[in-house]
Length: 299
Image 1 (cartoon, one colour):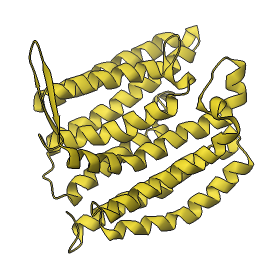
Image 2 (cartoon, helix red, strand yellow; image 1 turned 180 degrees about the horizontal axis):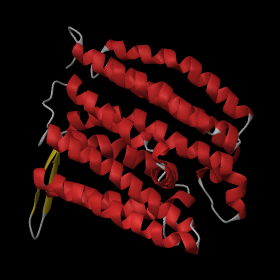
Image 3 (cartoon, one colour; image 1 turned 120 degrees about the vertical axis):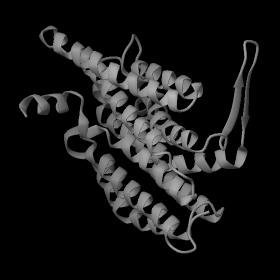
């Protein structure tokens, strides 16, 4: 048990909520839309998400470990990488080569995010990158593998790559992804706001550094943008009116924003971004699911 606890702490298992809830958001969207879910593809993809996320975290911690810790840490990385690669290849076999390209892109950015001469997380694009890969790409891949040809169709030859995007399904997906995108980006932004003074001392210039006194208003605005996306989806008929009940969560979320505005201390108030993530995403997922299951719900 001590070894397992040590492993869980090293790969920061508690921080994997973003990928899991982005996956669940897309899953209930498929149910709401009346789509048939391919269980094998979905489970392999879910395993790949978790294993890849653990691998990226292990690589990040490896760069910060001392020499004595590096040998076992490297072994952990290699095992996790092999497992995540196996899950990815299995999914490619079950689907198509587009998933291979997307998986390769994910791994490339997962490594560059926290490793290399200028990691993405040390610059102003960390929030957008984390929001894109966790909030948008995970739902995109899950919907893509369960509804072949609905989002887009593509062909590849030696002389041409042809992609045809189906606008309405893609628009729905982009709007659906706004909530996990915003919430994930705000976790990163809250972290950087808390660390901004220390980051400057070591030469890290994150988005919080560039925003300066506008960082806190931006933190609040991103939450409001998430709520706005839900209102737009309901108004457009993409979600059940039941999803408007999510707006009631703005009461505790606003209270937490006020606490964070007063104090930005990593050990004390960073947790607010995690709390707000859960306060919004869990009811959002439940309401989408209920909208699809109740009579008259769904598309």
